Image (cartoon, rainbow, N blue to C red; front, side, top):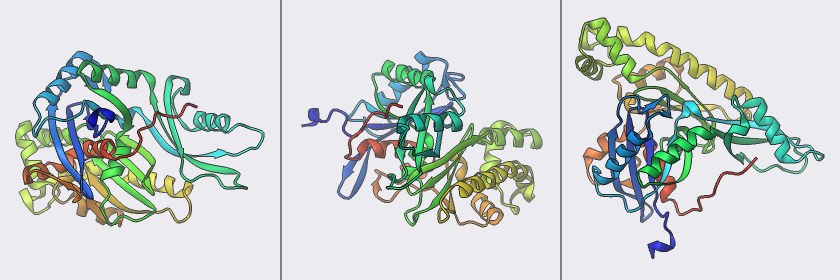
Amino acid sequence: MGFLRPYSNAMGLDVSDQVVRMVQLVPAGKGFKLRSISARPLPEKAIVEGEIRDQEAVSAVLRELIAKPLHKHPSSRAAVVCLPERKTFTKIIEVALEPATPFTASLQQGLVQNIPMKIDEAYVDWQYVSPPQPGDKVVRVIVSVAPQLLVEGYIAACKGAGIIPIVFEPESAALSRIALHRGATDGGHMIIDLGATRTGLTITENDLVAYASTMALSGSALTTLLAEKLGLTQAEAEQAKRICGLDAKRGKGAVRSILEPEFRPLFQKMLEIMSYYEEHAPKEAKVKDITLVGGGAQLLGLSEFVQSTLSLPVHVGQWPEYIRTPNADVQRVAASYLTALGLALRGALRVPLTPPKDV
């Protein structure tokens, strides 16, 4: 009876500047089973800074991604698609509740004051952090905003590949759904996504994205820096980074001495974001721990370095136990697929997928 639920078990589609990753999950008992998984590199400059510059090239890669998966073909052409964090804006804001003013007007004013883009040229989604109570003068609302032209570019690329995009969400929303370790409690948690071209910083509060941002620190830039400083090829520098990491005892500490200063701006940015969040959040909503995800999360010694610097518990994101996988090879690449997993989990959950609210 699948024709009655044509968008059942929509795949998760994580599109970055360099790689496209796809995961499809299906419900299995109390958890989920991996149905399909795949990844393909993108041609150079097909996507630049999150913007699709060559729609035909991206569509061609998406078609190949579906036609030649790493494990089984997806059973649905529907997809929950990731939007680049650097081009979207997600934040918890406070909206005034005034009896004489319609809530939509107050929300519009709050967006203008807090969102650094033209609201009339963007798609807006929002929800209450908690519903307003009688007597409240303000209510906290999570808003997510994306430029219309950006979204329409992703729609065109998907349709060119025969994929039906049913939901778009920022990377931070997908990661917050999947990355936090199982012992995570209520309150604030920070997720650091160390990618090949950017690093994403997200704070979640009670399963909602409270704040999201990005910065220029990237795995590829670190590799290039090592190559320049040590006189290595890119391949040799990548291997040195993987083997030595931030371990002072490996390679006589040469790799660590080069990489360590590059992480200082990240730590400063983390402290600034945590300070901003805790200043504007309820008193009990402090950042309790940090989760590292993305390809760079596996850098040797990084979790210990972050923990010693920021004095908070640090976890490395892992493939969740409640998602069954076909083999250990899939789990070994887990850190790179967590965003796609988070998207796929939304597609597999048996809940309605509703369109954004108009403001």
